[in-house]
Length: 286
Image (cartoon, rainbow, N blue to C red; front, side, top):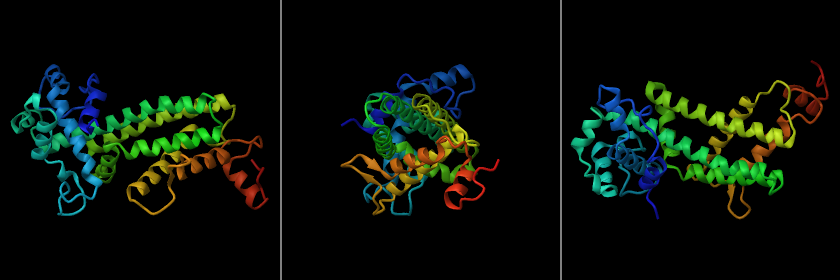
């Protein structure tokens, strides 16, 4: 089976990283761009990404006993050693690592930006297949939504960059560069999801309830999705995903949002619809 390091390598071998890696030890933009896209630079980044798989696993041989997983696990010696195993033909060394990033903090800033880019790229690539499932008419709407939610949960859980994002979110308020990387990732994915929802609305001929935007719908669904994935990572004994029926709590939540937030023809806002449904008072006031 292909290692996580080589999987990331293959996904981004041709991707221009010059705008992503901003902490490299080069003054001239031309030299910095060349270094950003070098094979060895990518090897170091992909090796760190592969190591991040161990941030949330119970393995005494890989995770330090000093406490919960932190970025300290992604140390320079550990990354270089992993690169030597994964990419021996590039002859990775600590000296070559230091030549690229003067401090380990510089590396971590670039690495988090890179990891968020891999997460963004993986989800956007999957969106192509999910668009076909939702728009292709091969299954009824509910079945298609369930399948997309099920596959999405498994995709996210299998990406080391997602686990890394949990640590990144926790430290974003104290690190401007980490915060910027997360904002870029969230903005890009929100645009992609909003585009998909817009096309779904067009194909199925529905509109959202008055006062609700596609952006708000996207934020709600993304928040629910992230909450489910955190619970899955926590290993809770809950019926979160059914591998036999390809259904999940996320699928049910997504369908509930479509049912409640799509205008059924009454022209009401969410608040008015709630009032009419549960109190019978004032639901149709403007």
